[in-house]
Length: 167
Length: 463
Ligand SMILES: [Zn+2]
Image (cartoon, rainbow over all chains, first blue to last red; front, side, top):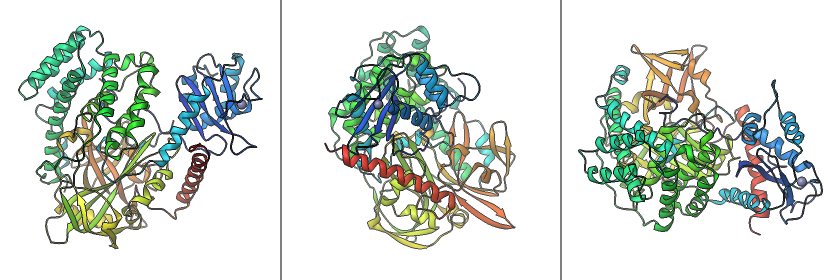
């Protein structure tokens, strides 16, 4: 066993990088998708629920009221573009590319190369089935804010040290 | 003065215990659906290692069933208990060594009264999920099995009595989810995941997390520094300090903790912002003050169950004066039986007279002919302390820890010399707020992020 394998406190997942949340309050790599929520620029009550599947890049975008996004007709809409951009800010381009199973070109690829590689695969537009679970994951995410702090010690958190390394 | 030489001496029996643990950790890598011969050996080794203990019969039976691919949840609990007992003995041996090195005597453990009952249903669900993981093995995990945690954690989070279980399982599940599918992993953090799995299993037993106060504390609390813990959806700050009882009794090493669940986009200074309103002690650390406690509940382990109602601001108290004068006189608390694990060792120490050297393995303090590794990665990003400042330091308040076979020190604060004058830098200096230029910027970014999330929650959550 290497030191890494026999360490109790090795950092497996780096923390999210800080980013501005105003346009894209939620983005995650989960359920085999890059998925998240994009706030509407015009209607404060409306959000777009957007997702792109790993590997095939099948994409979907609709509102929280299950109306189809007008921009997502055969190619990535602006919401999905924003989602990809914020995912790269939050996780770093390499982690997003690895999760999405995108082969990035050599050099110093960034969000443009990532977006380009996925678009070039001519991904299909999926149905809106993913929207409801993604939106409920977003609500669950927000609900963490409402949970009361405690001053009873949590010894389990000894296994979760901070790290200065980022995603 | 710290006897660093003692930390490098071999500890009797340590390698044997850790070899049995490592072999069992490999068992969980492959999973227990269809155990292979190497896994059978690992299971037999675990049973043999606890053969002379009260666990012997239960573990032998569990190992036998597991080898046949027929282990049920109770068998998994028995295996987790055996592994935890072995690491408990490792903890005890290491702690003895630390006490000798630091010249301190450990306290005696007295069991607290059982705390409130915990709901059995959700604990059973947690156990069932962990049993599924053990069958799959880390190489066999996929999104389907990992996502089983979401419902369990969702049911636990609102109940403060289940916060320990929730924090553990939530952090563990997020890590597993980010590592799916297990079959594609280049390497597996075998010790770590087996730790989290075993601990999760034991925390599903009734009464495992009883943390009733053993008494109250009245006197002066002198902070040493802040230790921060975080995963994507939880954060905890623990202030280590020396408590001087008002009745003139022996000073004690104590901790005060505050923790909160959080969205994963709350990071950096946002962590302090989340915790700050719930423990005035964080501000005292930032301001370099002591606090006066009256009737503060405290556990047998020396954990203050903080409430601002029992504390008021005290006089100025410099952490390095505390480390030089009060720390050597302070007695350490005992460790709760379930917390006996090497990862739980975090003993406040004061070091000076070392030479900081940066080599291939990172920063080390050369001290009394020994080289003590310095875990600079544990220094919170939202704070003024940097690895560079530690490398330039002449004195250090730290937590002595042990991981992957060796002792290391986690810096909580250092003294450096600027124009021939000592300057102290605290890792947790921003915990209570800061006027530092970089700190103010980090605070602003965190405030903006939190405002967006609260606005979105207010508009969307209650529909
Ligand atoms: Zn769209």
